[in-house]
Image (tube, rainbow, N blue to C red; front, side, top):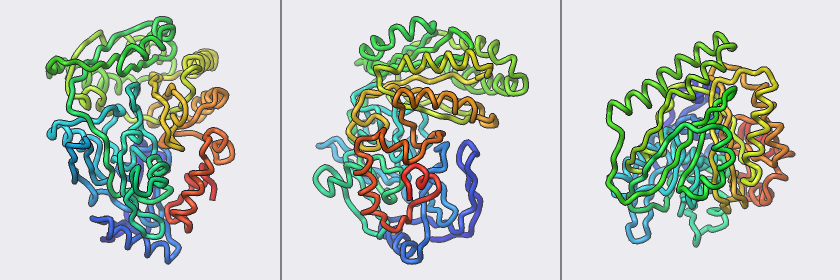
Length: 435
């Protein structure tokens, strides 16, 4: 059903468009009809989900497809341990639905606001585990191509499409459902503690190898880090008390941090001192809960982000070079740098394709010009054979991205096959993939 046009912007506010038309299909067949009509008239179409990508990867100034009509869990296979959900389902709704069914994803990122189509299409990931990326946990998918064809894809049917479309950038078609491999619900214990830069960087490989899921944050202009060790336990969940959760996650991590970010934006010279305060504000704590409540956390302070995936063997070296650049630049960086790791996967345009990976994520406040900081760090990441996160800010183009992905040409060939008229292209995709 089409509705009158309105403005659309992404979560961080960097992308704003006014589509010519907005439509809210409620089935794959309804969407297929709309796509076929768009293709026949030379129009373009995108389904942006919740708009949580920092890039304009999902933006459309022509036909915008709202995902609200494609939500909810629609299938459970207890024998094969898979669960199928419609593509517009938000991760937080999928997670809570899985919990009620007695299941969990193996791994996930720390934000749960995205739709499952958007999260998988951009390569969203967690840290550690057997499969860090959400896309590596996909067992099947349904996609509507640029010719209006509905394809069911898994390891046995349309396997060549399945292979590539798990991280499809929205360039191959519009996903209408995803089937995930799941596990029986388990308890995850989190141990969070302050650490020094030297301790966490010198022992990174040991911590990554000895824990199910490990990550840390480094506060620029300080020697302070906050490390998080997540491990499975057979014990019953022991979540944080409501009071402790309110103080740590709401008051300190969001409200107080948000206020300090505003102070730092007004008085950049204060940022090193503010970072020292933030680095000491969160004390050591241990708690346990169902996995999604440990993996994810609220993000009330809006920001801009760039994230690069570098080979694991040079991850800490690349981070150290970024730290040196920050220290000598005169910049004042008020957000921590997030460090995670991932096992290799086999998805052509996954940032972990073919190699164990360290992820380095750099942030600035939502209203801060990111270009000098991100540009300087990006040059370092490129020197370390870095690959940018598709949904986060970067300046890469098709010409220099192609050498970073061994199966780049396979993806382009699949795009030509599934969307020959480029119904799903936009300015971002033309930049990173070519025409």
